[in-house]
Image (cartoon, rainbow, N blue to C red):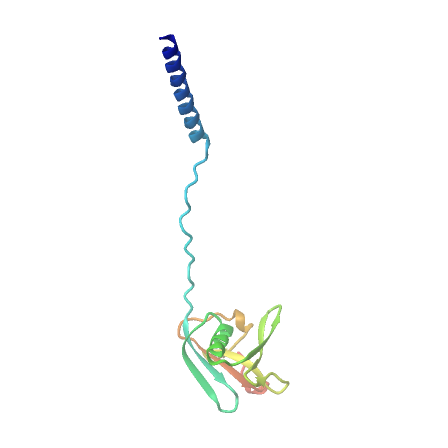
Length: 147
């Protein structure tokens, strides 16, 4: 009977020890909660109209273009219509050097207008609003009215 009693005590103390070890581990182990999924806020880009004015009377208009900047407006149309766009990047932003086969020269260059007003910053910095009209115009410097 002493062997059974010792065995029972040994099992009892073992169970208590195991329970105590599990309890301590649970209390000392940091609880890791799953993070809720990160929902990225989608910036709604405005719907705008884009005009490409080649300066010779040819003006093409594209409606329902979704773009955030004047530069995005041009490149969106260019990508849709497979029109090459040449650009040069400066510290202040991107300057359009050519659209299609018309490239900047001392006599004519590409300039953008938003709702009839000439751009005053790099095209990739000019933010657009819903229903804006962006015109990209290939023109001579003296034919452009600056604000």
